[in-house]
Image (cartoon, rainbow, N blue to C red; front, side, top):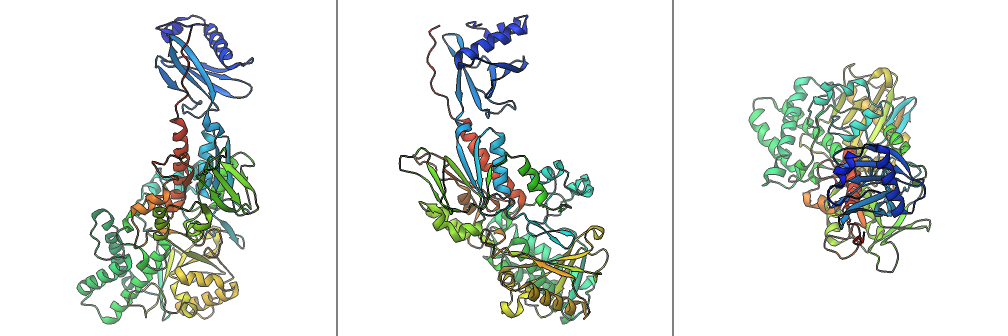
Length: 601
């Protein structure tokens, strides 16, 4: 075994026989680890000299360096291997200290097998954590990513698009890696297109009197509305918002601007354009997952950020992403049909682990850390029973202040189209809504008025003649209580009224029901009138809080609602799963090894 007091690495480089180096290192490691069998898996010689060795049980990376202290890790250069070695100097002699990393032994439970939970598990498993388990309340993976069928067509019950499919979007990068996208979505032109949340869809618009609207009836109001939305986003950075909610701001500004810009047009045209703005408000309710834009905070509206790229879909279904990710996780990592009753944290009893997860079936799971990825809607409804001790007041208040609403889909299939061949979106404009409203006075009698219209599933060669209707808010929640037949009848009557064609009849109708799903309690989050960026920070903050004397990072929080600017999106959910996994990886990477005894050699 070699040990040169001052210039060990440099001396090693002068040895002519690499086999001599290899045998010396193996002898050293065997001496300190009591390993009788050691096989060199690979070997390299660089400025910082690296050797990979493999025992029957674990992989070892050995580095020789002049640094007095080096934490060492896995083959990808991160501190994530099952075995770590520390090299230290003691009396001028190189010593190797071998111990199992704490990260490999840490027990981590993830609640929820949606995109956040899956991405967290991926990150942890790839970093060498061996005791990772996902507990999922339902019988499937994916959470709010849910693909279904309408006849022979693949449709999305949940998440629909990759919003901003560009290099900055991890969902896009994964979908590309797995070969899940159409060629058009992969073009540089598509990735470079910055639509700022307003896809340039070709519209058809119909009025409640049964006529198709001309572009000059529709475009001026749409253009003004987009300008007002952009103006609504500016207060987040500037401050000084004049009103509490986006709805009031848009109505007040629209009234002021229309008095100037549309003063010379006739009353009927002005009334129709204001009714178009009502329709656009309903669109925004769907985009934001809110009952009304009166519930969306003006000061926080600009927190949401868009990514470049023209929104795209998955030809084979969004669940293809989930299936590919799940195939890369170890088998048996997920326990399905395993609802959690309570997370007991900050254990003061003398248990080995500070967290205990109590499941509905009576099973208890001991853990060092739990990552909670349940939707904000579920958290709002069940937080008091889900955590013991309860959430700290500041976190609880943020859970209550942040917004979470319902956005549902109603798919409708036809034998032939009643819309233009190039049409991508259909708007239904109620001519009695020139007061710029986005909610109906009588939900049970008029819920269908909240449906702003339909998007057209493209390409026609793949889907045939299928539309996806969009409806948000309490009207959407009421719709869920009706039978499929009642929904189909009401939608059919609506289409016949707006097209003026009494014979239009759907072949099939299918709707989503996210509000009454007991594990989601709605669709996705939005910044409500009383909340700010601090509330999102509070929501994502791990427990116990900083400064506590208890073991850190017992309860961590992920999910789309915890992302500071990509809330309500799949990429936001995925990034938060990575964030919390990285928080744990960083925690274990920063733990110092125990003091080594000074060498007596």
